[in-house]
Amino acid sequence: MLGLQMATDPRWVRIVEKNIEEILVDHAYCEQKAASNAISMIVQYPQYTDLVEAMSAICKEEMEHFELVHQKLKDRGLQLGFERKDPYVNDLALYLKRGKVNSTPEGVFVNKMLFAAMIEARSCERFKILSEEIDDADLRKFYRELMESEARHYTTFLAFARKYGQGIDVDKAWKDFLAYEAELMASYGKKETMHG
Image (cartoon, rainbow, N blue to C red; front, side, top):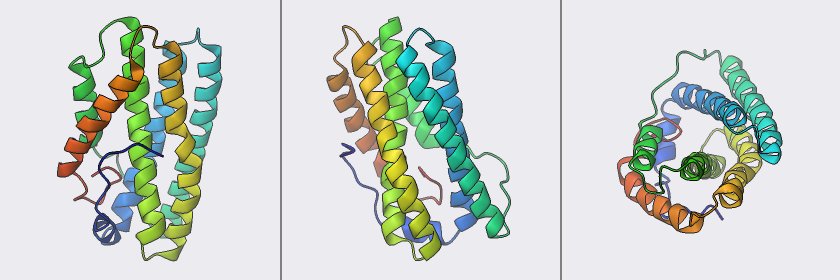
């Protein structure tokens, strides 16, 4: 369903289990950044009423998820701490900045939608692995519920890329981006972070 070409090595979960605080803190900030991204889309593209409505809903949902993850930290006697850098996200952004679609306003819009879609797809895949493989029963259930909720976000971003990316072969751009992300994943899955 997600279209990802390289699955996360299930052994990543064993790395995560060694530092639950790190994955929860990183996850909390992923949710906060997803909410911020949705707000940015509203600010940048107010002319698309359906996008504004969808991003508004995504922002609310992502902040609800942030609150849920923050509560998990508190329940375990842990603190939020400071935001961590996300090299995976930076690598995706660099690929798109190299102009794989184009630099027209439509191309920039499509890039932003594909960027968000890819992050949502990989996050959803990681949630699925955690929901199936982590030994912690509470977190297994937690990630199952979040996975089901997050799964539709990536399709929302792709749908808007296709709708408003006039003159751009969005399906080809997405396919190329998926191929790049698969190559990129060879160097990830080794840290106790959501995309690490």
